[in-house]
Length: 304
Image (cartoon, rainbow, N blue to C red; front, side, top):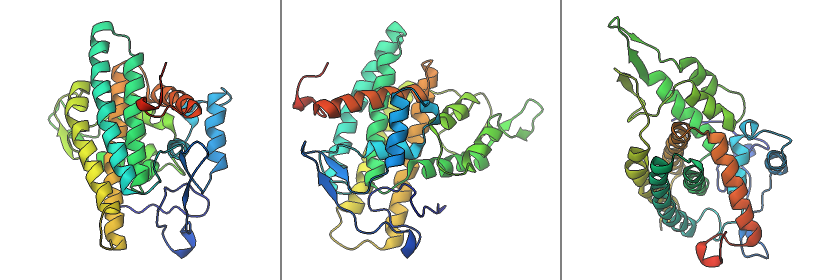
């Protein structure tokens, strides 16, 4: 298991243990605002400003970091962070969002209009990120770790009968050793270079691989949701003490699933003629509007 050293003022999710005593964030409580929604008491103004710059057009969503996206994703929860209640809530919501994404995929096949599909897979991504944060996983680090597994484990069978590196090898190499957090555009660059998530990161590929949105939404994501729920419940639902190493292992597994899901959402977006950048930008605008109007759930009031 790769350990990423996040120290100082770097982003980390609620309950993240740190590498040593000096890199731990100290005690942190989540507090409900006047709206009744929960926010972390540890604020990251630089990450919040990065989101604002993208929304007002002074910066590109492609240049926004995954840390900024994950910190934004932790805003306006209906239950406190790092709890069993959050594990249950987000897993349930993810099931609903996945059903809507499947319906949007069918619409896309009929109309070739991708906006609804991009919107719905953005909602799925939001739920995945929420369960990752609740499970103490850092999306950016998990993506580097997962793509490194693909980088070292994938070879292409050539016409000459030998095995070679895939066309996306160099892009993936830059991806995994990037200093600091990954940006949204880094995932689009990787998928644009021909990367396609596989059944396993360790494979010999004998023919060009393609993404199947139907397989992803109707099969893979239906596995990811209960897996993320179960792992979160192990962290937050146990009545006995979980040793540090065991907790780290659970969070690592949560991050691995979240990273794989993120790569597959990006691949679906590219399949539909869009980008992960558009997925993120539409989702942020949509969720921000619902937070402002306090209509996080369908039961909160009418949505437009």
